[in-house]
Length: 204
Image 1 (tube, rainbow, N blue to C red):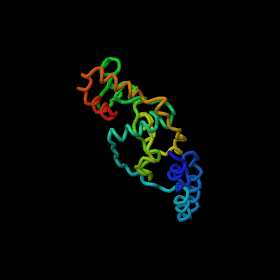
Image 2 (spheres, rainbow, N blue to C red):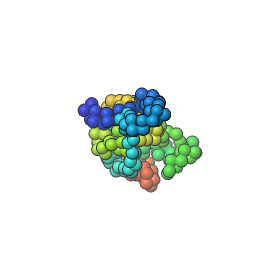
Image 3 (spheres, helix red, strand yellow):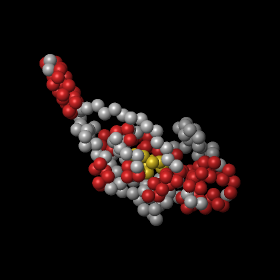
Image 4 (cartoon, rainbow, N blue to C red):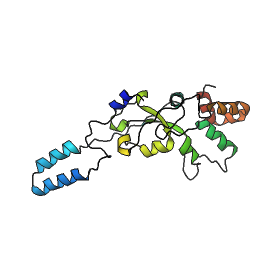
């Protein structure tokens, strides 16, 4: 994401951020209420701690869109800088070792290996859609499913996170090439719809 793009999503309209304590604002409002100038307390609230309704909107992407973003970011988690792994590769391991590397279609944590959360990439909105961020590639980043879940509707500023540079696909491809080679070597893997869809999305 370019510096110019980040500037557009920096939440500058929100004067108070979670990197600053909000308690003094509430203390000021409480003091004004105690003294009786309710209009003044209201004005402080509007100016210093305004309410921004969170809008929950579901977004879904094709596997082709996901693969394009994962490759663009070099299969690197843009929040941690750690390497991510092609989802199909993880499922291949589950296919061969279901007892020690389990997978559950709804990702139930008691029935799914933690690697799916730590290593599977997904598309995240750098600046949340719910807080005014656009749903376009300039605001997308490849991140782990775990970090996507943690971040939810919060901004990077609120979490005190930062956006890290993308990786180089030549250095790390998320085991995409190896995944495709394994599927080509073991055709029965294509009977698994999850593996087959990711295999096709990988350009094979």
